[in-house]
Length: 349
Image 1 (tube, helix red, strand yellow):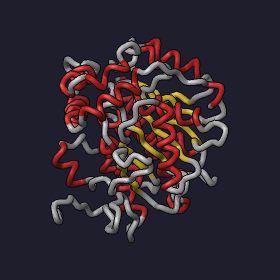
Image 2 (image 1 turned 180 degrees about the vertical axis):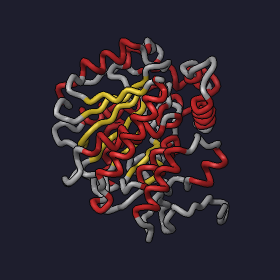
Image 3 (image 1 turned 30 degrees about the vertical axis):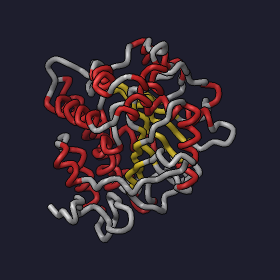
């Protein structure tokens, strides 16, 4: 509904120079709660429906001297928040893979930004570009949610800026700390030569196969579609970043609050890689999901959104809060905790 000039419009989207999600308008708290609950409970949507519910990314943002390096992003929620939560996608993902989090969290009053990064060929180049983007957005400090490659890049950026910190906290979903776990460091410098179909085959090899529940199957279908939207250079650069010989130096980021989010079922990460993350961050909070595969933020969005809220709760009432102070309500969080606890008990039975 509401297509105007070929661009999908949605009742939740504020009009203006840059599309935004979850604009407050005149809605009351009950409407916000209903919107968040609906977004959390909704199944993964097919691509066409997604384009109706979520606006296209903001106009391109260029922060490097090379104008071919273009960032795209969704900036949703109250602009008065100066320490938002930023989402970094995996190799196969685009900014809109976090639409479940955007819709739900902005309904509760959070400011969230979902990114799609340009073509960078090494970690230092990415970190420098990301720092310039934060400067452009006038954000001194941010919370980072990184999925898989996004989680590794979030750690590298925190490490890169440790002398002048820009990262207030980290949520690492199915993330890793050392690229050598993929045993591809010797081919990392040749990805740029490979055709797109071969690169996509490499990525698809890590997707789950066999019988899956409908939500996980829909999530994988959605990610396959997002993968198809990426060009050869985008895929090659991301695989290079994913496999280029590098590791996280934990002593540089030991003071940053961390939540490690992972799943107990099949994913691209080995048990050894998960154990290494636990050793790297012995004081980190752990958010375990019984199921969810490689993309729990799509197929287990209610649980992921709850764990995000629990992580960000420690910053409420400080200058680093990612939520509008007028929207803070312990009752809303408690209701969701009870709901999640009840659903877990039901699964166990």
